[in-house]
Length: 269
Image (cartoon, rainbow, N blue to C red; front, side, top):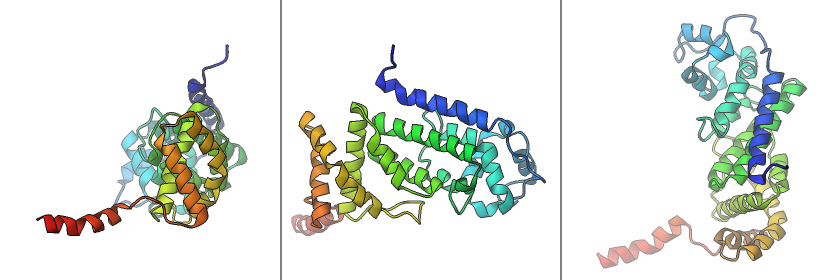
């Protein structure tokens, strides 16, 4: 019997973790004790970071993942991430505690652990785990800003956005349709209000999203027909049309609302 669609993303995630555990079963070694900023991390904690990755306490691992790359010896930083990546992925996963993972994921980027330069098998295993995380995020009903935060983190870690947009567009099924509608509506609205920017990924270009959104119009329209009460779908279509036409959206920004209501409130007082 085939697995229900709603469970498939979680099976994909569990399978990805199995692969990650196999690929990273023998973590790369260090040629000397871990070097880092002793103002932020005690020397005793640096010794712990250089020991068995499984023995590093959660709070110390969390500090490592959040701290900027410049606080660690440059030639060790990528190796440390390779040693901790199975635990990091679990932290970012559906059973983890890594809420808002974008900033942490970005430490894997070109200015940090350089995931793109890892051995091919390691990089591929991590990216398959990213695919599973993104599939879960799009299909589990979470708000769009949590999905877009994850997209930013993954794109920052891997050095590119386009293939992850392609991955989102390629997800199928009713849960995926609803998730893609939420993402498209949120991103299109932010673009119209000139409020779409990446929080951590300063090299990222939000205009890639503006180029990608019109390709979703047919999918949005079909979803709107099937779900005529879905405001996200109708708003997404309106916003995409406005973006393509280069015209302002029909909605007022919060700043416009305050500007319009301010004098009225003063007059009423």
